[in-house]
Image 1: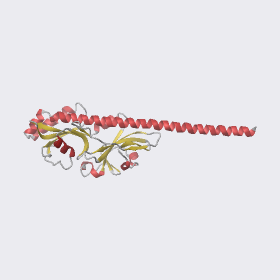
Image 2: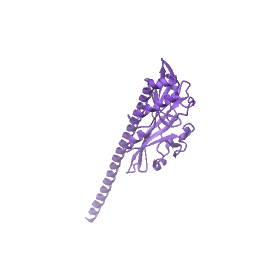
Image 3: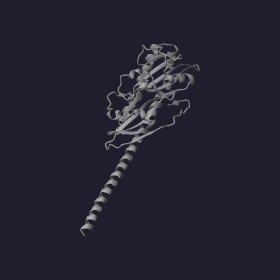
Image 4: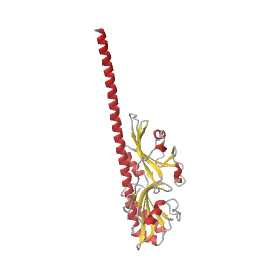
Length: 294
């Protein structure tokens, strides 16, 4: 009888341990599934907000390019008048959305006419590194993208037309502050990482924080410890990964020439320290309906 009781006790212990293990695995699977759902939602939300902001920039670019006051001052080549008119329009536009808006106008020879943030800058050749401007002057179609210049930001460009002739172009430039704040309200931190090889163009970012072969474009005061432990260069086009108590989703930014420029990464809490690494390639296409959305 004692032997039978001993075996029953052993079986009960084994069964309890097995059930505990199964319960732990099921709990882990459930937590992993929930985290992946949160990461997928964060990725979808981020892409949606960025696309909406690009369309907003494009609408402003088209609106300003057709503004009679702006066109008339450009035709007269009165830079001081153009500068004042553009900045007055910017003040009004900021009432629609509290985001940083800059405007640059370009001459027909692809040089700078005015920059809303610095009147003294003019006649800067742009053709060699601003492919978006070159494309608009060639195709005479509006374009919007996250494009590289002295900074990395959203740039929407439209042709300036007078008497059915293209006489220049107008560019609306919007930074990422508004998007960061929108994502922050949803519990997401944003990291925009530019490949270091492009710092010869985006030279205003040279002193920003470095994470491996990448430079942090946005907030210099961000906590990057968890992200620094990940080899960013091994990421593909989009996906998810975890590091310590943080979980990240991301997607890549490509230039008009299909060169990978940067990653947009958002993070959320991973208090259970679940390990995930899913990275995917994606086909990239141009939806050409008069407007190029990169």
